[in-house]
Image 1: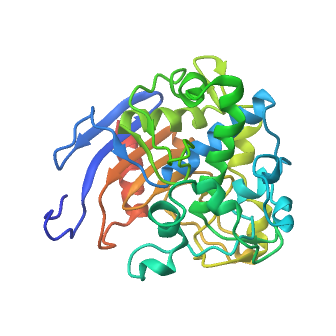
Image 2 (image 1 turned 90 degrees about the vertical axis):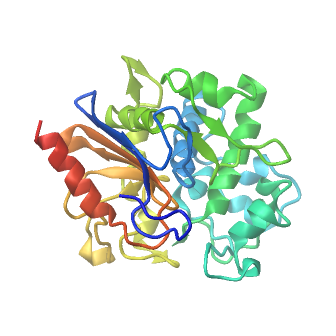
Image 3 (image 1 turned 45 degrees about the horizontal axis):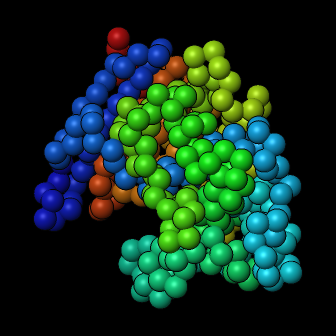
Length: 323
């Protein structure tokens, strides 16, 4: 279904791709999109950064214990306690405000980074934020953390593998031809927001994760990377700032578990609990459903909250079961 462009109401789906047992079983486009149009994925970018971090760790260029001060000088001394693991867990403790619509632009740390004082060098802008909490003690979803992660990846990997390392080491081996990641004016990957790809190519990323980081019998991600990325981060048991009960994450991937003791509620209760996914603003998603050997991709321009992802995924599973 589509809403009127002028009003931006209703279900505004741009593309749906469903893969089951390694085969494309459903594909449909709307609102002028085709299989050949790359789509802005917004925060699906964060999950791509998580994958690229796995590659960086696998090559030995980075470790989970790497401090941000290894790549940024003259930071507030306490900020050197922030590690790569904290960036992956959204547990940096930076004093950050993650808001978008319906707030004054001056309130949003995200807007300040993307469009305001931080736009020329986004990583430096984030890394210089004061700490609200000791790193590793609180969870707060943060486009800033992911963008700083992208900048560190850029600095660490470009020296050894060149500026095109995401393509040479990740996208090209997966057969992804549509990928674009925007850079800030300092030349660093904008790791929180600006990855573009077609739904088919997004599905390739899901298929890599469905198959434990392997593609055509070649291991692209370290042996335990997918497992660790899709396990509940320990910080989820600690204080969670500005997070709903169904905001449940591993390393930049969203999880579907319920843990009543920790106050966590599965966001998609009608699909298996071991499902996980990447998610972006206005309806972008890659969902991996291992129990059904499925990947479900959706691109969209949702604006009014009428789309219910659980209902959509329940229907997608039904499509697969009907074959």
